[in-house]
Amino acid sequence: MLALLRHSRCFVQNKVNVRLQNQWRSFTTTKEENENCVLLEVSDYFATVTLNRPKVHNAMSETVIASLKDRLDEVAALVDSKKGKENSTGIRALFLKSKGKNFSAGADLDYMKRLGGFPFEKNVEDAMQLSSMFNTLD
Image (cartoon, rainbow, N blue to C red; front, side, top):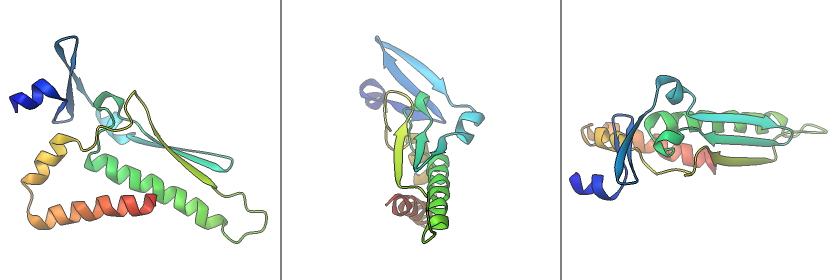
């Protein structure tokens, strides 16, 4: 663990420790930040989905995965509701972006650590949720 702390970011209990100018800085995400971790904006023919956890480099946790899936389902519902209608003005493009300087650090390591203690069935359920989110994106 010490080597990990020296050479990369370490995500622990919704905290990210980042080495800046040879000092470790700690950032904690709030409940509000977790609730607004994925934003959706629809304008004209475009939908923009934004990862909104810049303090933790938009790391993917179960909350982010579920929120991202929900937002993508909302976009899919908008597209489906306009299909086949005359003069349809439905969504034609989806933009996926993030706030902050990193798109995504990948998996939130605290989230991954917790998954290690879960039974096999829970890990399969979690993998299926992630797969479902990516299939919705596709």
